[in-house]
Image (cartoon, rainbow, N blue to C red; front, side, top):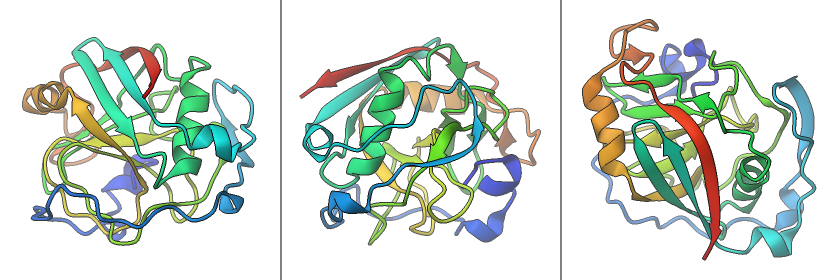
Length: 220
């Protein structure tokens, strides 16, 4: 979903579009053993911070992340028990200021309802210099408040992710790795502000600029 404008939703073949009716409860099973977590060098390598080496003990420690944006703060609880490879990568990048001074480059307001962030180039095609496998997909749903990985196909996760600001129905192909605990109103304010349709009706750059000043990680 949404690595490039053609890969999120302009590629509707990757998505099931409609209004979600799933409950917000996450009933997915625990993540697979950490042996499946490998970070593989990949291009592009924008704002390169190195490649993490997975540590299952550190990855299991719960944390929350707060994105300080020009529109307000958004906090989510990392699903370290269900998506340890993904949450370990996000923490690795955040603690190295990877997301700081970047912006959320894509907002969708028709059929699916997401705000996409995590690309330091702001083009929709940037990445951290490595990729890693999908996780937590069995029975995955995308209610409002879900934080999930954007990708360009199976097992192509990098740095780009999206917030679901309104219940959305998607195929279970995008790793859910967080739940918004504060700031859903900020996401909804951004959505109400609209977008510029540059990728098609209901799909473009947010009218309200979403500049990420910093990402703070807090152990729980």
